[in-house]
Image (tube, protein in one colour):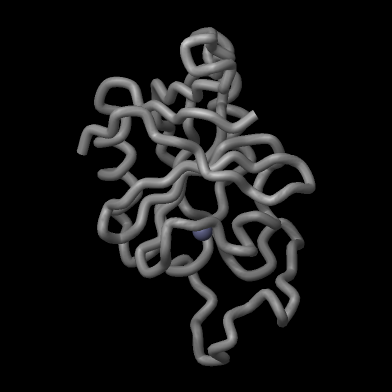
Length: 166
Ligand SMILES: [Zn+2]
């Protein structure tokens, strides 16, 4: 299924701005748009992001009753578990976004969040807590963007980026 990730118009500029505005904490957002299977891309999916739905990072320890196992935590016992290393999107926000998107004939394609201190790959926790079958965009503190397809019970796969505007 993976394929090509495209940011329409100024959606990437908006996303970067929103996510990095709360640095050093992780910022997060929902990504709205459409997914097409296109011959143009050799049958691969095109994930077209048309709108960024900014969300508050509401993470706190044991949010949603999900407790981290010690082995998932950093090897550094002094690492503070905080919104600098974790994010969570309010499920209500997702419901609002889904309703809104449906009216506009688009879909919630997935989530985006920032790694102010990390790399552009989803962390173990990101994968464990993500919704299945969606895309995940990560923006690093320096503004690098990467997109991932998260299939059910399979490793995440990196999406190719369509012409990136910075
Ligand atoms: Zn993350």
